[in-house]
Image (cartoon, rainbow, N blue to C red; front, side):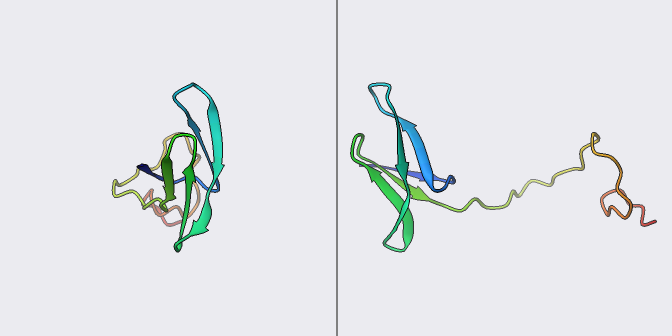
Length: 75
């Protein structure tokens, strides 16, 4: 059995070897949100996404906001 950790909830769509797209719903089992697809013997387990470690910079496309701490001006 193959185990796949997913960040989507509550439904997972995946493709079987025959090309069929199948949707399975995660359910709480053993203290986790998980489901096993009987067609492809794959177990899907939900894992909450972690915040990014990469520093993000303000987009130049966004309009300036008064009091925005990213720009360095506090007026």
